[in-house]
Length: 167
Image 1 (cartoon, rainbow, N blue to C red):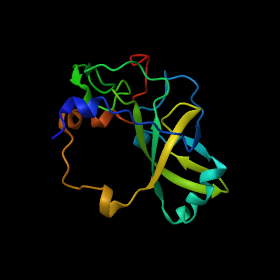
Image 2: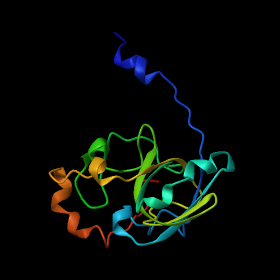
Image 3: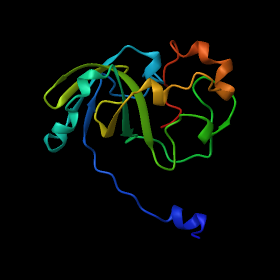
Image 4: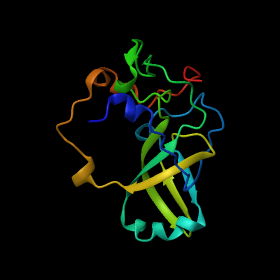
C-alpha cells in the first residue's frame, strides 16, 4: 500500500480550458463568494474545447473550477473574511492552499460560441479556467448539510468584501 508521502510527491498538471473575465483587477473589494454577488462575468473557452459547451444552455447554474493564479503561499491556519478567529485552512475557502484551486457556483446567462456569460463573479479578471460542470441540485444540494463555524457569521456574506489578507 502506498504511503501518504507517495501521494504528496505526485505531480499533477492542468492546462486551462479558457480565461475568466470579471471587473475585478485587484483582490481588495471583491466579493468573497459567488453567492454574495450579482456581478457579471464571462469565460472565453479555447476553441479546442468549444464543442464541450454544447447543451450547456439547459442548465441555470454552473460550477466553475479555476486556479487561484495570484494566491498567497500555503498556510495551515487562516483568519477567514467572515471571522476573527484563526481556523484550519481546510475548514475555510481561503485561497492560500497547497493546491490553489477555486470553485464558484454561478448563474448561466448565455452562451455565444466559445463564450459564456454568468452572474456571480467572485474571481479576478484573467483567472485561468480549469473546468466547467453543470450544477445539478439532485447531486449538489444537501439540505441537511451543516456549516460549522460559518453558521454564526453567514448573515454577513452579502456585505463582506475581500481585503489584502491573502496576498
